[in-house]
Length: 516
Image 1: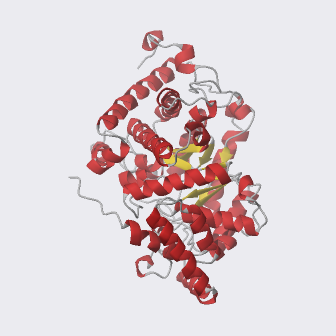
Image 2 (image 1 turned 90 degrees about the vertical axis):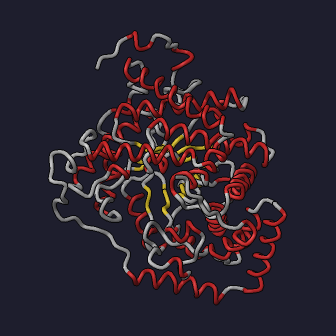
Image 3 (image 1 turned 180 degrees about the vertical axis):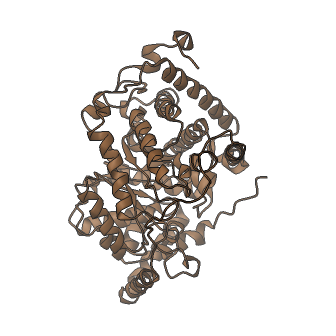
C-alpha cells in the first residue's frame, strides 16, 4: 500500500485542515494543544461501597491522576436501591453502589470538589446523581457555579447499544433537556452531556458507524434542547462533550478522531448556525477498547492499551482512560490501575509526543483516511436523516441492526483467521497463561451497603420525604423541569430507587421490541 499527492486530489488546507485551534478543528480544538496543557488523565473507577471507591480515587490522585471518573453499579444505573430484589447479585459489581446522599458524601469525603473535575458515567438516573453531587458540594460550602465535570446523560445510545435505559425515549430525552437547561443557568462549567460512541463501538460498530451514530445522537440532543428547552444553540452547545473508543487499527483511530471534529464543526456551523467557535468544537474523552482485551495471555492487553492510548493522544483527545490489563478477568487491582495510569504518564512525560501538535497532519495516508471516514460517516448521517433522525432510527431498529451486522462480520473474520488476535487465533493456544491477582467484591460489603441504606430510611424525616416525592410527581405529570424537585428529594434523603419509582409511575418503562 502506497500513498502520494494523488490521494489528496481535492484536498484544500483551509477547508479540510486549517491550523490547530481553527475551524474546522481537524488538527485539534486548541492552538497549542498538549504543548500548553496535557490531556486530563481520568481513570474510570468505582466498585463496592463508597468507602472502597473513595480510597481508590485518593490512590489514583496520589499517583498523578488529574481528574475523577465515577463508575456506578448496575442497580444505581437502573434506578434500584441496593436492597431491591432485582439488585441481588449486582450490588457494587460494575461500579460503586449509591442509594442516598449519604453514600455520595462518603464517596467524595476528603476530595476538593472545587478543584477536581468529576466525570460521572450515568445515564437513565443521571439527573438524580447530578443533584446528589450538587447537594454534597453545597454541604462542603461549594457553590454549583464552580463545579467542573461531566455527566454522561446520553440515553439514546442506551437504546442502541448498551441497554441501561428505564423510560421510553421521549421521556428520557425530556430529562436530558432538563439537565442541559438547568446546568446552563446554574452550573456554567459543567459538561451537560457526554455523547457516547464508546459503547456503540464496544457493541461491534465499525469506526465509521461509531462516529456517525454518535454524531446523529448529538444532533438529536441539540434539536431537542432548542425545541423543548427553548435555548439558543450558543447558550448550551459549548458545554456538550463526546466520548469515543480507541480501538486497535492505529491509523484509522487517529483519522477517526480528526474526522469527527471536522464533521461536527460543519454540522454546528451549517445546520445550527452556531456563531460561537466553542459551539463548533468537538471536545471528547477517550477510553481504550475494553472489547479488545483478552482473557488469554492477559499481559498482551497492556501492549494493546498503550497503542490505543497513543492513537487517542495523536488524535487530539481532551481526556483519557487507559484500561487495566486484567479487566478481561476481573475488576482491576491497585497494581493494575497504577500500570494503566503509568501508560498515560509515559506517553505524556517520556515519549515527547505531546511536544508536537498534530504530528501526523499532512500525511498523505492520514489525510486521505480522514477524508474517507468523513465520506462514510456522511452517508450514514444522510440515511439516518431520511429515516427521520436518530430517535426514529432507533425505534425502527436500523441502528441496532447495523451494529449487529458489523459485530457478526467481525467475529466471523476472527474465526476464519482473517482478523488476527494475538494469543487467541494466532501465535498462541487460546489459553490463559499465568496467574493474576483479581479483585472481587466480598459479600460483607453488600451487607454493609444494604444496612446503611435501611438505616438512612429509618432515621430520616418520613413526612418531609413524602412531601418532596409528591411534589416531584406533580412536576413530572405537569412536564416541568425536574432538577430542582429532585434536588429537594435527595436533600431530604430520598433514595435513588424512590425517585426513579416516581418517574416510572408517570412515564412507564421501555420494553425493546425484537428487531430481527
